[in-house]
Amino acid sequence: MDGIGNTMQKKAAELERMAEVLVTGEQLRLRLHEAKVIKDRRHHLRTYPNCFVAKELIDWLIEHKEASDRETAIRIMQRLLDQSIIHHVCDEHKEFKDMKLFYRFRKDDGTFPLDNEAKVFMRGQRIYEKLMNTESSLLQTREEEGVTFERTLVASEFVDWLLQEGETATREEAEQLGRRLLEHGIIQHVTNKHHFVDGGLLYQFRMNFRRRRRLMELLNERGRTIPESQDSPFCLRKQNSDGGNTSFLSVSPSKEIKVVSAVRRSSMSSSCGSSGYYSSSPTLSSSPPVLCNPKSVLKRQVSPEELQTPGGPYIKKTFTIVGDAVGWGFVVRGGKPCHIQAVDPSGPAAAAGMKVCQFVVSVNGLNVLSMDYRAVSNLILTGPRTVVMEVMEEIDY
Image (cartoon, rainbow, N blue to C red; front, side, top):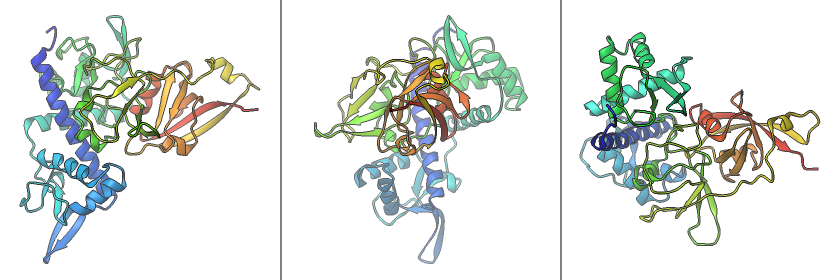
């Protein structure tokens, strides 16, 4: 079928938004368990297992910079309550209140409503994780219609894999599962022209389930239509609320990289042009961000051979960067080799010692000197939260 149609696209977008809420809620749940914010609590001689105190949670959200103030934190948690991710332990409050009330994630007490959409989403996430955790050659860089796409699946090979893994019993069932994953916005045809068909067409996962979501994304419906930076998915959000002093916040990518070509293809539609940074006020605004594209910080581009010349004016450094709740805090730009275009002074990369103008040599042990920024960014995006990067820095004589 040529063209999945406007109705299907709208449906997929709606389901994708639902999926983002589920992923964001699950990531928060795991973090709160790890921080011991969720625990068994007693009240009036009764024990309430696996719950949190609303007032304490709001304190935690502000402390961890997931919300700027208590009102915003309440709006975030109300969104999760409205979507049946959390609930009051006795279901006596339909609103999330800044009080010493007990709330609980429905996944912790088995009351999460598993409708058909949620089941497909959870199955898609499980399949995604299985593919990412195995040494399968299923996901590869391939070409279709003269354009190169990263991390693609050949439909027929994906069907073979589903059968091999016991996900489905027949090819017909596997094809039907592929169609449901596409209709739910989990996978897509690389150029969005075809439905899922057991054959030689290429597909990609539309969602990066491993991306660390910011809770503010739950409130920022407009932000979903803002395109990624053409320079790097690890963009810096430049904030300038008073027209004077400027601060930077690192933000993790909103989508997984889909294409390695001269023009990035995206499942998101927007009238905006290419962007490097986007500036906005610290709080959510109804006005769209102002887009701009900064020039390269390099005085001149160097070749991989020049960087590796013995006795040359460059020194190798190794950084271990642990991503925080909002990303790694740097911008990658250029190619063959890539360089560090910008670093958030308050982010994890800066803390590790990363600086602008450094050239990226390797990511998690893989040499990337011959890659462009899209490929390097994708390596980091789809890898672990802790990234080990080797860079070359010019010696300052």
